[in-house]
Amino acid sequence: MKLKAMKAALLCLPLLIAAGLFAKEPTSVTLRGEIMDSQCAYNVHSLGHSHDEMINSHISGATDEKSCSYHCVKDRGGVYVLLVKEDVYRLDDQTISANFAGKKVKVNGTVDDKTHTLHVLKMEEDK
Image 1 (tube, rainbow, N blue to C red):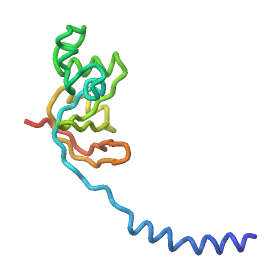
Image 2 (image 1 turned 180 degrees about the vertical axis):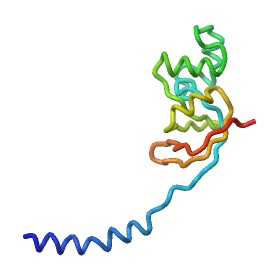
Image 3 (image 1 turned 45 degrees about the vertical axis):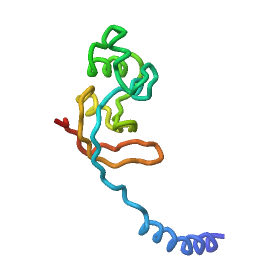
Image 4 (image 1 turned 90 degrees about the horizontal axis):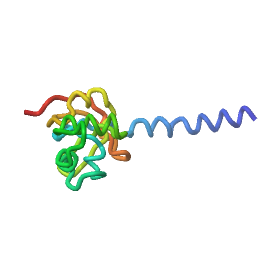
């Protein structure tokens, strides 16, 4: 029984090695957009991927893009995302994203196409 299992493992080994050789490495990308909360970005309480409805409704704690993002993440259960035109990317690093809430940024990272998550390598304000 052990001999059969060992033979099967040895037969599979070249396939595993070949799969590893042809595995696609994630490609680094640079994206420019705005760090905002997921509710505004996904139009949960807005109509145009913006903070306008929250700010114009005089919601306590939402007076500008930065404060609206903080409010929606802290008090409404949102997460920070990157809005690039009409595309919304989830961000794996929420700590660094909080530092840029409501700002235009340039982000270097890799994108997981299945989850549309941006794995942040570097983030800086885009001036």
